[in-house]
Image (cartoon, rainbow, N blue to C red):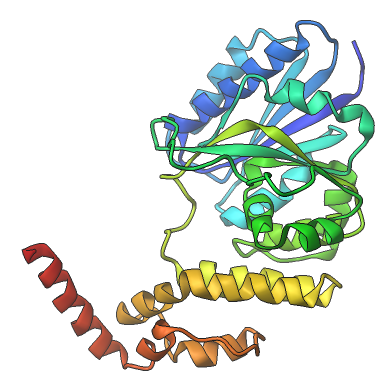
Length: 333
C-alpha cells in the first residue's frame, strides 16, 4: 500500500449530526468502490465547530465501525465556535493528502466520484471540479435542474484559472461558489490561505481565486456530488452574504489580475439576482442607506440599476408597512 495519502476529504461541521453520518458514509462507499482494485490511502478530516448536538458521538461511532484499512478518519472539535468560514478555511491545517477535497456535511458523494477523480489524477491538475446535481433535503434529485455547471458549450480543461474564468463567464459561479466539488492541491490552497486572511462566507472564494489564477484546472463532467438545496450555513435571503461578500470576492478578483470585464459582468449579475434581498433586509431593520450607495461602497461603478434600487430609497418603516400589506394581499388571494 502506498504510504502517502492522495486525497484528504475535509468536512467542516456544526450541529449536523443527523446529516454528517450520511455524508461520511457516502465518501467511504465511494472510496470502497474505487479501492477494490487499488492500494491508495485516504483520510477524512472533520472539523467540528463546537457542536452542541450528538455530532461527536456519531463521528466516533463511524470511526470505530470503519472497516476500510486504507482510510483514516480524523475528528477534531474546536474549543469554541470560531465561525463557519474560518472553520472551513483552516481545515487544510489538519490534512495530510496531496489533494484536499472540501465537502459539506449535508451533501452526498456519488459512488463513482472517487474513481472519476483518479481517472485524471495522473495528469497532475492543480484544481479539479466535480460536477454536481441538485436534490431536495431528502436527496431526491430535482429533475428540472441540469447538472452544474452546464458544460454544453465549454471545455473541460484550462491551463489556468484566469483563462477558465474568461472562457466560462457567468457559468463560473456554478464552479467557484460550491465547495463540495472543490478538489485542489493542498500546498496551493495552503499557500494562498496564508496570503488571504478573510473569514467572510465567501472568503474561501478569494482564497480559491488567488490559488488557481495561474494553475491548471479540470472539470469532471460526470456528476459526482449531490447537493441538498435546503441546508445552507446562512439564510437564502441574507443580503450581506449575497451582495456585499459575493461582490467583494469578484472585486478582489479584479485587483489580483482577473479580467475586469468578466468580473464586472459577474458583479452585475449578482446585483440583478440579489438586490431585492437588500430591500427585504432594510424592511426588517437590518440595512441602512440604499442600493445606489451600497453599489458605490462595494467599488462597482458601472451603470446598472433596476426597480429594487429605486424601492431601496424608501425609508425602512415605509418598506416594512408595504411588505405587511403585500403579505396580507397574498394570503387573501
